[in-house]
Length: 332
Image 1 (cartoon, rainbow, N blue to C red):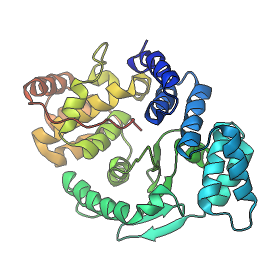
Image 2 (image 1 turned 60 degrees about the horizontal axis):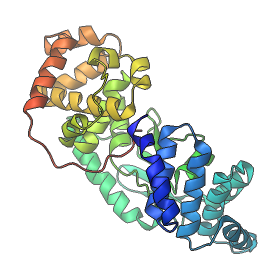
Image 3 (image 1 turned 90 degrees about the vertical axis):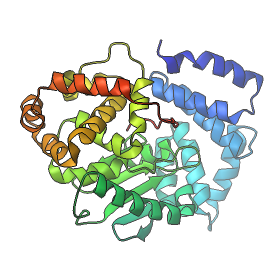
Image 4 (image 1 turned 180 degrees about the vertical axis):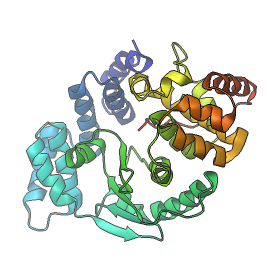
């Protein structure tokens, strides 16, 4: 049983002892979601967390109050946003789409390089000035990290959603974030409990100018851009049983089938070592050429094969001092 699933029985027992433990309730929702085998249970705990955090005794009370607000002529977006999420967790998808669609009259905020969209009264809307400042700061850092002389020609477009269910109902995508690289468009959850606000998706857009490549390199570069030198400790603390070889993970099918908490951490650490060893210029050449033949690309731009690159990375990794860790975001 994966470690995440193994924690569920103890957490359910804890919540049974203390039904007002909202943190445990939300953690159970995340773990059921991550396990991917009991979506109904995940929705049960997401709904329980939402209803209790709003101060309602039960789902029925929440529905009566929120439906009354929704029926009023001057219903605020926040009430429709809440009601739409409740409907979504109850699998009343048509009603959820109606309420969330009515709530999501996007507020657009433009900066030098971004067009940021948030729902009025949402968490992202309240934090919009901080988000705008951070996006510009992190774009500057991204361009420097990958030695890109110019920012994207068009503004990077962001849409922020209150929760996973809000994003899923409106976009059809269940992940915390996804990006349309060619269009330069990012869709991400930014709510009370989950804030996807780092440079991961922007890194995809920035590096998209080099063309699409192997997912191992795309996700590794984006994770390294997000977490810097911490990626090495992240990989060291990831489950190490049956970790695939780098040459295998460069095949998209293998990467997709591998535990993302291993594959993303490994890819990020490996990319970090490539950039540290030969700089961004060599990495960008390898990144672009690897789309067709990663083995030939490694020999052309690093002078050795993939196995030798992996051996050098592992040797460097063993010698690195520990870096203060942070809470891991879910891979995207």
